[in-house]
Length: 286
Length: 249
Image 1 (cartoon, helix red, strand yellow):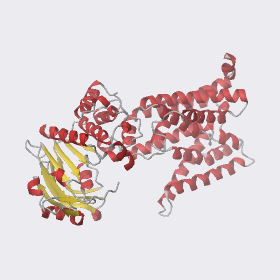
Image 2 (cartoon, chains in turn purple, orange):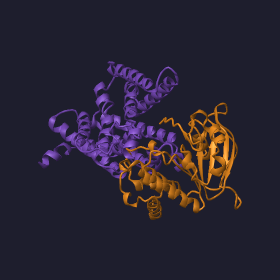
Image 3 (spheres, chains in turn brown, orange):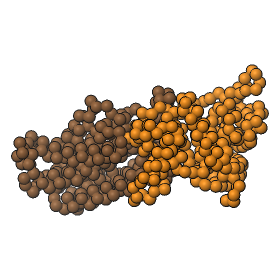
Image 4 (tube, chains in turn cyan, green):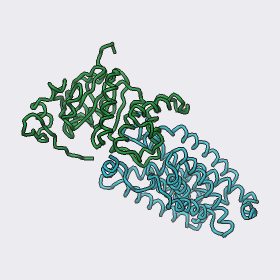
């Protein structure tokens, strides 16, 4: 039984993978709680997908993937902003069109014969390829993100709970929303290498959505999401080792399974689609 | 500001989204400490813009707004998020955030302030209850407690009594009277003309100031007609008037 748990991590490659996904899980979980509360899951997914051409181009040119992804993100941001300025196009259409176009372009680049990495690795990631350098990058990101979440905890609560009154209480909702997007981008940038373009959102949203169903207080939701993120990462590596399936996909499946397992339990509401503050709620509560 | 000066002094205020689209023009009034003020006006008459101007959040503003202290705002509870993972006490604690540097955790002083504020609105027993599980009236009282925790001299309340159960409504009015007696200036927007008669002062606005003074003077049939125009119905007894409400939540 013990070997079942320890075998996958008996060598450096497995240990590094475990450390890498644990760091990512610990960071992505709490960040995901804010993403779910701010209803930014779609933005998180779009950000990840729009990085693909940058990743593929970086692989072709031979520069670090992170640099390419950052450049891809910048291009996507400019394109989405430009599309949104057209009066005839609504924001969600602008994002959908831009992201799909970039994703297609990225696939084209990644499928070209000169590409050193296969498309699959970019899309689905490869936690087992995490190097010592990647670990250091993840660690630095984790420290930065934990610091940002701690320092930003009160503004995030104020603007998320009540954007109308937030300025009077000391927070600017527009600035807080922008800061959250920057944090999402920074996290995706690092996580995309081990978990891949298509799967990174699972580790961000899955544990967070599960935690928000299981607890009704913010601090416990943040801690629980971190714990579930780490567990999903470790469980995914175990599953991948024993079932001999792709590690990134296994982790994503475990993260989503964590959420699915909470569905029978009574949710606290944050992940349900009920619109807050509707007249029906007000009447029902009066 | 000198002693005896008004807590809220508005002079020649134009405010709105842009100079071309001013929602209120030429508004002037002064509120001394220790007064409750009802603000009456039709939808789109500028009540919300006036509040935003007082809070310093109106995109466009000319004229002067002088405040004798900090100002706290209580939004309509119908607009608040019910799905946020916070307890009643967590919400009230938000009123203390601006006083605590970001690097310092909230301490006992903040918890005591928040607990006392919750007690004042009669909800000490619900401190641990999730905000979304409270009744509409209780949520409104929690939002008032949050404003109390800000320890401001001026309090603005946006229709705090609409859609609120009766015990909560009575409790809210009692708390507002207590705060008035402690020297705060309390500004309350309302749709209810009868309710406005219970306040010390009434301000009627419809894109400009129509009347400002004690209810007996300010709430004349002529003023109400000019304030509400077609939205007003004078009841057959000729004394009382009701406003046809257009909800646009």
